[in-house]
Image (cartoon, rainbow, N blue to C red; front, side, top):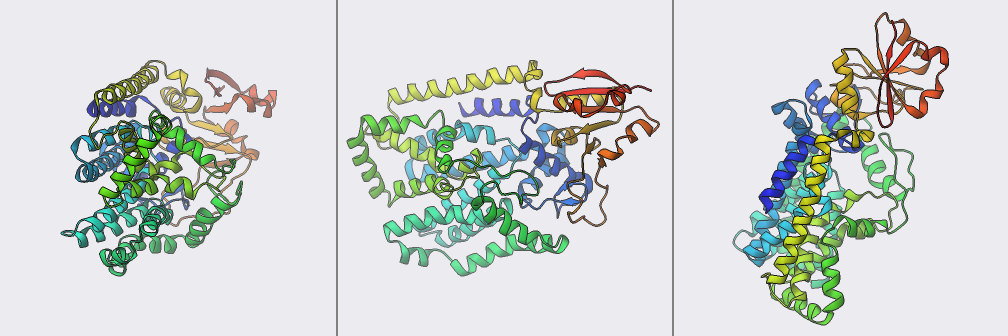
Length: 495
């Protein structure tokens, strides 16, 4: 079953273009790493450093492009491999604690949650951080319950945190500290935690792995540490609609929105534990208490881990669906535990449960098969949020392509950085520029748009339909429309 879902996910990597601005932005930053050869400082645009996130996820995508060339598949293959490592990690952990069948069902639930399946080959920073936090959480549990390899697991705990630091930053430590702290506090495990975890030498190991990049990044682009630690890790989450974001817009949502996102992102499984709790409340409660006591706080640990992201982001207005990801591996285990408890079982599935699970997984797969067919044979359905077809059409015409207005990262990615954006002003004029850049920023001021008519070459001009009215009829007399897309029109200069 998992093999079929994996094949489906791989097919989607090929047929689905970059329709999300987040994915296309990180894919383009990764492509620039390969093109410029600058693996130290990711670049938001040529010679413009990207300070929003550490580089581990971008290194992962760049490595795929280095091996396979620039494509949707190569940008995503590294992320897919990370997701498989994460599935294996959860499987091994659950197998050791709850048995082979339980582990297989748990990872099936995990892989088929909406958020994990879509993120499993989605170019972003979150899944690398989840690998780090999950490794830390599994290592901590094993260090507390495995006397033979206690020291090894203790050091692996800090290796996981180091991965999180290089993937997304200190938030990885926070999202690991919340569930571990809650579990230790409520079970009064302070002494054993101090004895079993090499806190001093482990912290030094974590810093030895992660700190060098932060030092070199600050040295290469002074001001990075202040923006990253103060802006990205304080202002972003405490200031509604924070305007200091250099690379995007803060999201302002009602307080508590993260809980709704958590339930939605755990579909199609999130309703199963609710049913067990509602209809079998007493038996479920008693069974979960027995499991928790028998497994030395297993259920308590899983619950804290699953809820850590939503607890942390409850009062934040700046939230997006991927923020729930760090708790999803544990949430899959929690869902299965509560579901089993509703049937009064320890770790084995009953026949009715197997039927329900098969129906859910097959329905889930069916929806994605239909989506795959639509993406493959009717790409115009999603062309609204992708510039792939427009760029391919321009490349077929063999003419330089200019965009007006809002930056389109997918256009840059699919054109290998050759598109030129014309805008009212250069929004990065005050940013620190990297030294010895391979290329200069490709921006033209609106006041210089006449260059399109005076450069002695025939050009293509892409513009949103809503922005056509910003230019005079005299300007448009020099162009003819050649293509129409969902949001954009493509014009060719008349020579």
